[in-house]
Length: 161
Image 1 (tube, one colour):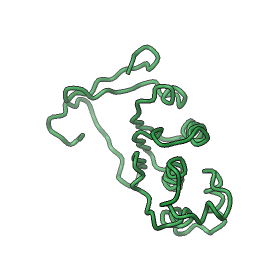
Image 2: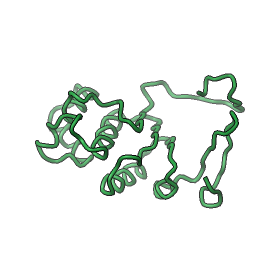
Image 3: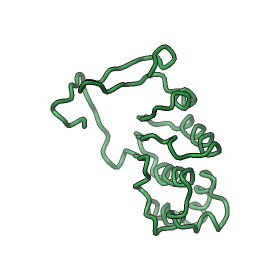
Image 4: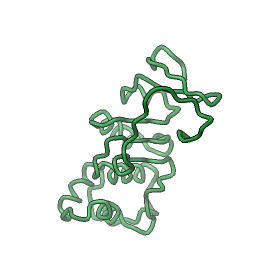
């Protein structure tokens, strides 16, 4: 969309290289349903030893062998979201793009994601209709795309989405 000539843009736009962007879409297309949780991480971190992968998965609430060796196809929405975030965070991208991350998650996953995002050192681009979630991850500036223009609002608390 940003490459569309119909979109009005002003100022200087610097975009990171593709490998510096972590993208989590609301349908979890990053995941291969035929791979296990462990294989999903091993794919993005081929040089990590098994113990490091298991510790990384523990940070995303995958604790036991049953969870770690489950196929992605059988995971719940919250588990799929956590696994995608585990894949993305293993590469430490400079920019994290989240597309409607709260759509399919349970309360435990939501709370965990909030803590992870609050600690995330990079830039975030969060697409969400969930104002409470945006406040909890301390988003203050937001943009609304309307009539082929991007409008910036500088205080989530003073404006209504």
